[in-house]
Length: 425
Image 1 (cartoon, rainbow, N blue to C red):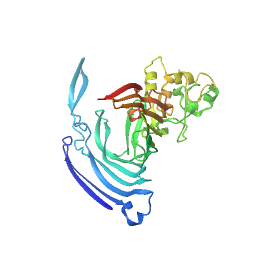
Image 2 (spheres, one colour):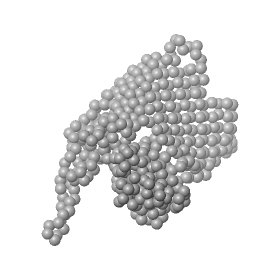
Image 3 (spheres, rainbow, N blue to C red):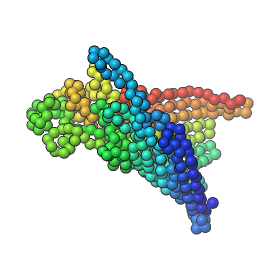
Image 4 (tube, rainbow, N blue to C red):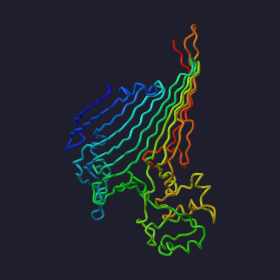
């Protein structure tokens, strides 16, 4: 077919929403198979070429059924010399409804060189409307879920593959994919225009114009090297309660008012990557077969809360990188504070010191096999497999793949090596 058009209409109900449980979700798409046109007949290198565009909506109810309502809270108090406990009943955000994911997509599919080369390219704009986000209720100090805003993801998705039979004995295939992601909050349904997240000193923020749950803290300009540098710094004079000494972090005064406070916090990055990539390679040569797959990402940040929790809990241990590279005298480090400084509230505030690059490249799987075929024997294949044998990254943690970019001493994913045999009778 040269011209393609389709449409769907979904009408769904979810018992998780009490006020408006029904959702209507349409989608439409158009396609033009250019390779079927007469003017493409003499272009032999292109066997298939298609342009397409689509628009659609999907509903998401993947939330806890009572996430918008905290019906009962424990409360504690005192009456005279007696401690009393009890319960309060609260009902908020009972009008939660479907998250509505609205996507526009423009793409191209192509096969070339007798279908040995395949190409796919997509540009997407994905808006999650009525996105359910955590909202803190100040009076009762609980976190509930509410349809609180709109989140946009947009970018490119590219993939390419080549499959070829070189001889009767040798064939190979190569595939790769690449995706860019630009995440931005375009709407927040409150007067402030932002939602605070994170916990304790490790703050995150979701606000209009920035990525979801971005890390929010202080930029670091260096480490105080000697007492003369501290004495010459106006921040030390303006904030004597900080008790700044050599080995403490130097924060950037973003607004130039001579003080370091909450107004100087900036976006330090997001747990969401700028792009992700992956690929695979395989070949067969006579009785030998080989496959390998890999993936990775770049542009994301990781909050090293693992390091912070060890320090804040007064643990006597610290990771090797911090122990070796800490400030321990003038000129020894302009990046890491001193061991004593790590115990101070000044240096424990969320800053660039705690936020690290999350780029990584991982070999996911390698397998090498050899098959014995003989008319008098069953087909037998010997193989060696390595799962996650190599991961390359600079992050000072066990594993760079961290949910939501916050590492709370995530246990590392193991590498697994297998030797096996398959016999077909």
